[in-house]
Length: 279
Image 1 (cartoon, rainbow, N blue to C red):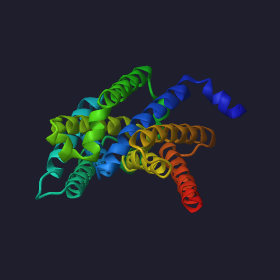
Image 2: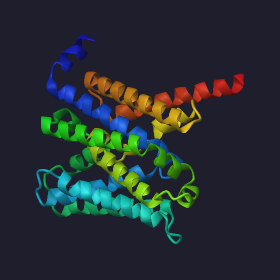
Image 3: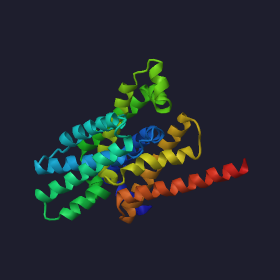
Image 4: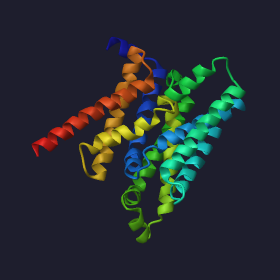
């Protein structure tokens, strides 16, 4: 505890915890919707797209790669949504196609136009997360706070519509709900969350932030509202625990958070099993 309190005196550690908690909160809110819509793997696909966009930004020596990464990821999210509704190309095939293509393209660019002598190290830190979350500046923290507030407010304002689109899109469309608009909102919010989470857990582990809290909450509750609230609480607890352990023990941030999510999922499975036996 003394070591932890010592680290908490440094502003960059507090910045990292604030950003980590906000990213976990936003990821969990959309996680329930994506899991129920059978789009839980979209986080992995968009993270690979973001990886390719980051490679493009590195080639052009852009100090603020968000100017390229965010628009490309949002456009890809919309394309995935549109392509997934195409009868010829199903959602899972579209995700796999864009995901693998963007990942290969990004790695190819990094090899053709290397920005450092340690390409393998750059790729590894991008894919599995790095300690860059501990080097955040005040402006980056404020950007994350603003985007996170926008995501949370948007989700709360359109909660009923998102609920309708999630469970029965055809019925919602028949009752006059603009399903295309709300699917677009879901896609854009998902893309924003993916870009924000890149520095926290890396592009290969982002799906864990989306999937694990939602599945854990589904083991405990049945209603959409209860599952969403529980998912948010579990996600924040796991992110906070993982970051504290990472800071104190010196383990990788992303992997530690995912490990915490896996442990909580196992505990929730046991609780759900015990409940089922008692009933």
